[in-house]
Each structure stands twice: as C-alpha cells, then as structure tokens.
Image 1 (cartoon, rainbow, N blue to C red):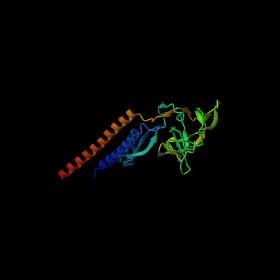
Image 2: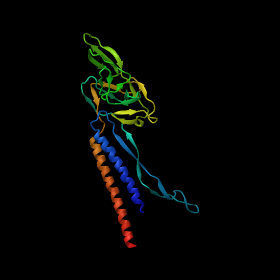
Image 3: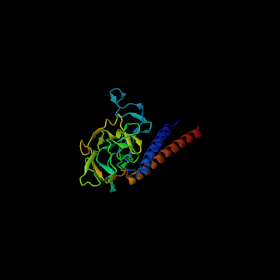
Image 4: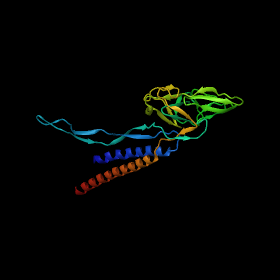
Length: 261
C-alpha cells in the first residue's frame, strides 16, 4: 500500500488535535485568568534506506542519506502563562496577580491546588474563598461588622470595623511559584495541581522571590488573542485540506496502476 496514505493519516490526526486546542482557547476567551494552550508537533520515526555518511564505494562517503518520513504527531501542549489584560472591577475582594504566581486553595480532599482567578468571596462563616467555594490558604476570616477591606500589593489584608477609625490586619495572602509552571496539571475550574514536572511550590509573600504583586479591585482576563486563534484555525483547516488532497492523489495513483495491470 502507498505509504503516503499513512503519512497523510497522521497529518489529519495531528490537525484534528490542533483544531481541538484552538477551539478550547476560543471557548475560554472570556474565562477569568485563563491561559492559552499551544500544540507542539513532532515528526515520527524515519525509514532509513541509506544512512547519511555511509560508503557508496571504497573511500567514497555519501554526503547525504535516503530517509523517508512516516508522519507527524502532537507531542505535547504547552500553557502560555503570560499575563492577560487587567480589568478594573472596583470590587474589594477581586484581586489580580501582576506577574508570576498562583493563589493557593484547599480542595475538598485536603490537597492543595493553585489558581490565577482572584474573584474571591466570603462564605457563610466569613472565610475568604474562591468563586467555587474553595478556601484560600492561609485562611482569612472577615467578621460581619467589617465595613472596609484593604488588600495591599504585598498581600496583607486589613479591615476596618464599624465604629473604628484605624485599619486592623487580619491576615495575608501568599502566592506560590513554580520553576516550570507549564508542567502543572490543569484540572479544570481554573485550577492547577503540582506535578513532578512543575517542581514543588515556592511559597512567599507577593513581591518577593520573583513572585508578582496583587492588585485590588481588578481581575486578570484570559490571555487568548481571538484574532491570532482565528488565524491558527484557518491555517489548521488548510493543512487538513492539504493532507486530504495527498490521500486523494495517492488513491488516484493506485487506481491508475490497478487499471494498467
């Protein structure tokens, strides 16, 4: 069978995965603090008919070989952790991370997860939680009689209670950084978990150890560029069409050869 059929089949499969990545990026163009993905392609093994540097005759070395490729695959997807735009909300519990770092949250099973989504709220006990109800770590509790909340760039949380004139510190928000953030495991709901590839979390106050700072009253938008993704979608579609045409051409060649037999 014509090997071009199998090579083009790998191209169709790779372009299908690429389109899935682009579709997911576009679907999350309005997701708070979403980080876009990029598909990484790798060529497959080669069939070596004649090795480069071999001898064609005595004392005659081949300057190049004869190697036939077997296709392509998507080897990985990489997260782009560059900052998105910062949208001012003027909501006191909204915080945006300006630079590197993640908020630490405690999952229901007690394990730690990490997020860039700073849309914080208070639960029924007055604890600071994420929009999906997960407690931030370290925990911060706000009393019901608090009239003003201030979150400084270094993460210090201060409040003013009814009848008081001075701000009182009630806790501090720490950030977690990673040597290789692209190695984090995306588990959905704007959450990431630590892996061997990401390395252990490096926890510190915002503005220290190369961690970013916090901006109160604003949220980080998705870093997806819709125009760029639409261009990627068109490019992927054309690549898919070209691989389809190769299959059609290989089929035509085999059909011609069969008719001549």
